[in-house]
Image (tube, rainbow over all chains, first blue to last red; front, side, top):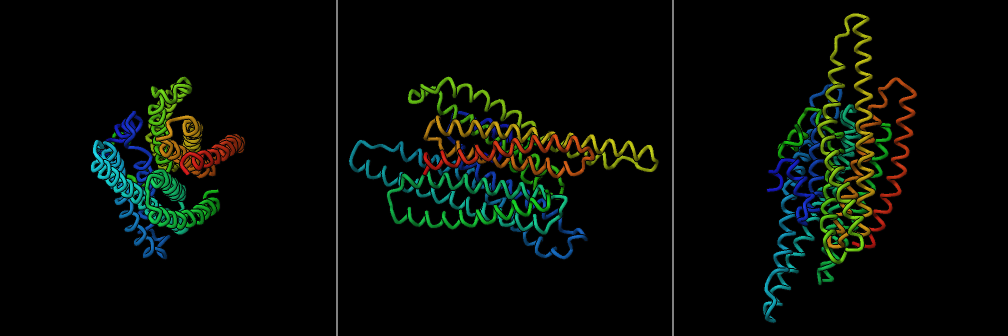
Length: 208
Length: 208
């Protein structure tokens, strides 16, 4: 498992001439890092008398940040597995007409999975970004730069994941599927744009 | 060392109620991930007959991406150490006037170090972004989304590092130093803006 690797080993594997792990796994990792940083800021806020007023809300945010960071961490390996499934499908035999049909269907199925997965990563990153913006606004001001970085990581993970959606979507021969995914992407992009602007604005006020 | 931790352990440590590691280390890690991804795309480009024309340039890019990823990886720990030095300075005794002066000087020195370090991280991230944009434009188009994600990670690491510069800069009582740092930040931000726009434009053409 990639996430059981030491950071130095993972970076070496990432930089190697093997195409996996690649940008999809890194996008999920960026989201997981953002989620963990959000959780840290929540932990530095709850239990402090100064922030007693927001204790209930921050406790709920903390539970969600921990959970999302966990989900996104699992997607690091899941994305690389999805990529490997696509590669395996391309290597299926194609000597006979029947084999060609089977191979083509296997590729389409693997591609759909490898498209849905980063879309889910993007959706999770959007949730992390939402939480980072909120904790930046109401959480421990000593950790404001941490909350801002959490948001930046989620934002980068989101767009990175969407590049992976787009690059795979082009190989899928089902117009209905394409339209459905595009609609979901558009919603995520619109919401990300709003939240990212808010992150920058709040960070500008709190950090300078 | 943080970078000798398993990814899962690091994420747990990050999310804990200890303020370090925090956003500074994560910004360096984002840059290191971007550098490693850039190196991967370079490796998937060199040696391929299809890209023989750019072989010399990509070989040079590869060496630089490997080196920068290494530097940024070391900054993951260095940033947390810099933060810990600031905390240690704040804990120095302040019973006598002499102790107060010594403590104040130690805080200023530690703060200057903790300001210069993320500025260096941002400068390295800018170089990674430059290389990511270039390899996206000339490298293996099968790895286009990887190059795009590399650029997004570098861009996020850069701005994350600059939030850390800003939050520490506020505590430094030397107007000359503040002005010098601000000038360097302005240059980095301007160049990042140009490169990020180029990344999005090229990615839009290549990926869709």
